[in-house]
Image (cartoon, rainbow, N blue to C red):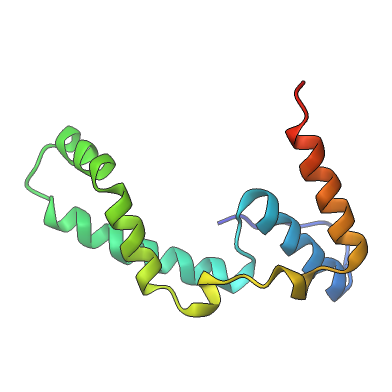
Length: 111
């Protein structure tokens, strides 16, 4: 969980743009969505670790790597629909969309 303190108050539109930026660039869910998502991951992975409890830590890690896709799918299945589908257009205005497209193009340029 990341808490960002900008040190100033900003408008609701700017908060939405920041949320869109964080989602688009880093796949960071904004606000309460992140808390719900963390809860889902916690429940799935805690259950998995309880099943594997008698094993050695190194064996659990190997199993975790091997079962990663299955665990990811379990998390996705438990997510409410509004966490599965992020409506970026609701957060962005046209100016922000152009900035994000430029940022993505800049990231793809070789150094």
